[in-house]
Image (cartoon, rainbow, N blue to C red):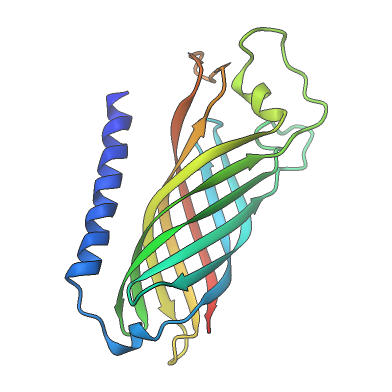
Length: 212
């Protein structure tokens, strides 16, 4: 659809522009140049629009600086399914999201504003005792219930704030657009038959980190 294509292109252009500005125009304080490796844990909230579910999970992250304002970061988040017999197939499915990419940061004292772009996977775990109607192509939910790994990419940003004067203990909050590629021949919830599509999803996280 043109609307989704426009949103996708605008998100990519905005992220690239912010990255370029961070690298070329922003003055850097001396404290930003001594940033070390950061590890931490976070709470993630993922809204999967195609499946009409909102997942809450926990995960870990690591940030490794490459230069004064550029770092490699990686995250791994587990979203447990709902253990309820009345829950639908999508809500009761465990999911694992793994992402890695680049982060560009604008520091100001103990506050850092950052933009990031990353790629990875969304693993939808197999489920037991799922009953599906015998049609072809089958519903998307039935295809995913047998287990599936989707390619993902993310564009977003957020802020990191030091809770101590030395900036080692940090709290961060961020939001972004998670693009999920479903490469399956199936019937979508809206009745459309597809052999693959990309869906936009909101991903928000808040967490704590320790910078060495």
